[in-house]
Each structure stands twice: as C-alpha cells, then as structure tokens.
Picture 1 (cartoon, rainbow, N blue to C red):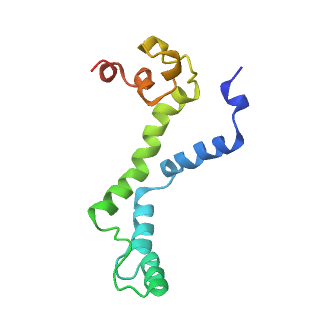
Picture 2: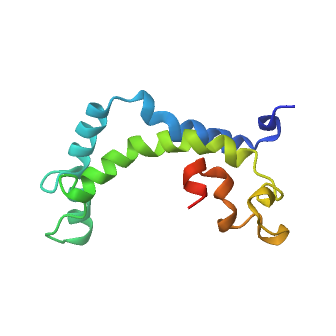
Length: 122
C-alpha cells in the first residue's frame, strides 16, 4: 500500500506549496520582492513606516540577506524533494542499522541513514 494513502491532507498541501517556486520564474519573484521590499518605496517598508512612524526600513531585499532570501526560495524546494521520501518512510526502527539505540532512533542524531553515503561515515 502506498504510504501516502494515510497521509494527512494538510501535509500533502504543504508539500505542494513548498514545490511551487519551481513553477514560478525567478525573474518574476525578484521583481515582486523588489516591489515589496525596496528600502525606499517597498510596500512592506511603507506599511512599516506608516504603522510605527520609523524612518528606518524593515526589509531591504537589495542587501546580502535579501539576496540569500531570494536564493533560498529556490534551493529549499530542491533540497526538500531530495529528503521528503526518506522522512516519509522513517520509522522508529530506521536508525537501528546506523547503530542508534531504540530510544534514540527517532532523535536528531539518527539522521545519518538519510545522509549521502560519503557524508554519513565522517
């Protein structure tokens, strides 16, 4: 039986929403974030200035942080597609082949079976 048959509908929707940036051209989102997060006339910053009376910009998409934010919008779905199946099939006993004890096999240190082979042996 397919493991997705018992999957919660909200989880399925989240998976679809996470992969949406694959279908939107990067130039379109760059222009949209430029309109939203421009330090002088961006909608987010204008609303921030109006609501707080501050002269400082809340968001600056032209900073290093803004560039990283835009790049993360496209790298996160790509990475998500790599690991979603492994996490969907994860059970409490999945960490046992990696040497994890039964109580810890669901913890953060039991993720080594999900890593690529060369990274899990370092």
